[in-house]
Length: 381
Image (cartoon, rainbow, N blue to C red):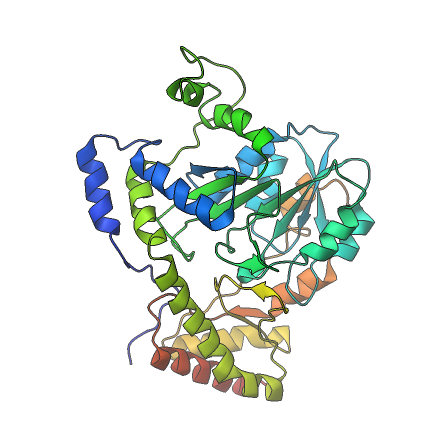
């Protein structure tokens, strides 16, 4: 049998045509026509006031951290179960990190633990919509109801086109970041975006985005020349990559439909065996629309994982685990404001297995993966 890779980026529309058009146009740097078009498509999807395309989701998070003007007396609450960028972007600006545990249903930040961590030093909370399923935003909002000074930053790298009670993921925080890395639903090799959901942030964000200059104000006719105004860096994505991204975003319905079919195929194939074997499958709470970014399973015992993944590898099927908890990593301890306990994060981190997930998976391949996974769990048990 042929091997089933964990991920395989797909061409679905006019990506290569747009790349060629961008190359022929003579405008291959940032801020070109494809960057504008991609930003418009993302605004339509999320309702953002402004979309700034960036070289990565990491750089989008870094730009949001710069906009907060953080200092060494400030802390930012970040879930321990996430990628390093969710914390590193704020640590780079001088803030200290308070690592929060996740709740076991959505694997998003636990509002109860967030409430325990809040003190006068907290300037922001980073929420991560794991696997494209919204975290408990209702609970988080209740906790923050008396703290309007605390900014919510959404790490929506998994979340584009998902929603929480009809609110789009990426549209609920003051800032939100997206990823177009090759492993995501919509790709351009490497890329990201910062969504600005408060009109008051737009002008300064444009300055920081453009190397600290008011260049965009100049192009909009708001000033007669542009010059250095503020802090900043070079965040913009090449228009060549933006062209590729436009080709993907224009096929959003097709891409999401394919990914939904893969997700639901796994659920249908694994629901019965999971109940029998003690496997926890993804939970999508009522009123939540997932973005169908990935499919995971929580094994009944952490010790089974190496054997399960090894058996599936022998079957020609690539699987992987996910985040190693940040709160007990070397970097996490280096940048933490104080030690915190995150037992759910640690438990999930040791038991989680991710199954192959990409647009090109066929129903037969989904069934083969599911059969191999069930057989491997039974053998390991």
